[in-house]
Amino acid sequence: MQRCIQLAKCGAMGAPPNPMVGAVIVHEGKIIGEGYHRRCGGPHAEVNAIRSVRDESLLKDSTIYVSLEPCSHYGKTPPCADLIIEKQIPRVAVGCLDPFSKVNGQGIRKLRDAGIEVEVGVLEKECMELNRRFFTFHQLHRPFVTLKWAQSEDGFMDAERDESEESVQFSTTFTRTLVHQLRAVHQAIMVGTRTVLMDNPTLTTRLWEGPDPLRVTIDRHRVLPESVHLKDGKVPTVIYDTGNLREILGDLYKRGIQSLMVEGGGRLLQHFIDEGLWDEARVEIAPFALSRGVPAPKIMEENLKTELSVDGRKILNYSREM
Image 1 (cartoon, rainbow, N blue to C red):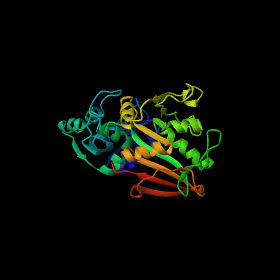
Image 2 (image 1 turned 135 degrees about the vertical axis):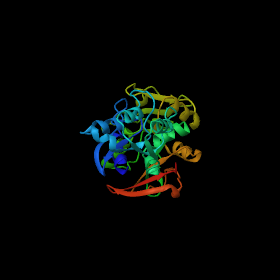
Image 3 (image 1 turned 180 degrees about the horizontal axis):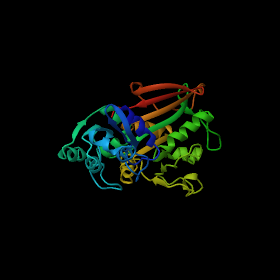
Image 4 (image 1 turned 45 degrees about the vertical axis):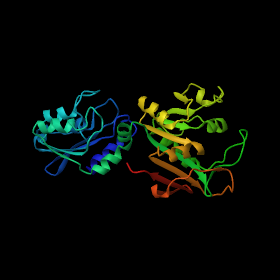
């Protein structure tokens, strides 16, 4: 199952909005086939694993390990449970159940009804963690929310300035590239009205290969001019006239957005934290002080999971329990 999880991560860019899934086929203690879900609309992990087996006669005495419950319905591809039954694979080990309403236990039931031995819950916590975005979307009916900001070592995320002045640069070229990498694995990215007015961001993945996320902002008082980049028509953009985060997340859920990255500013980020509407946070700390300016958001240190040193910056990663 650890190998399934390792394989599944290879689909991080192509699988969404489908979950990342890995599958491994074992015969007499040896791996004879493996695969993962490469892209949405393409063959699932189980299909790719079965296709990779050179001698199909071995399948009748093998075990297939899969990180997520095999599907039981017709979507863009036929049901994987049917294929497992057709190939007469006698044993299936499943990491965790699929929360999607059209599956959610039905794949397991179909396999067992066909006389197949099914074990569920192998490395369950790790398999659920693998697809936290997918689980959050289907169970909480909102996108998975990642907060991101950069700040000085004394807790400020910008100097006191007006629109004509440049913002403080906390990131290096390398850490800025890592931010664009993070953007590329989110379906939407959000900033507040003040950030649009002060920085006029493009919110693209220009420093990393990958799709540009849906751009999202708030303009309750209709103050954003037509000249801002978010209105240039180059990337799909949604501008809300409400500051109600639950309404916004609910609408993004209806649009099928599974993951949202929030880049600021400070007031918007703190709003997400205070409302408990966040799942992960990435904070970059530059090695200098500002003494005064725009305060960075306050987040509970008990949620700190890792602290890294990258290119002279501290990168703090926070996470809430599922």
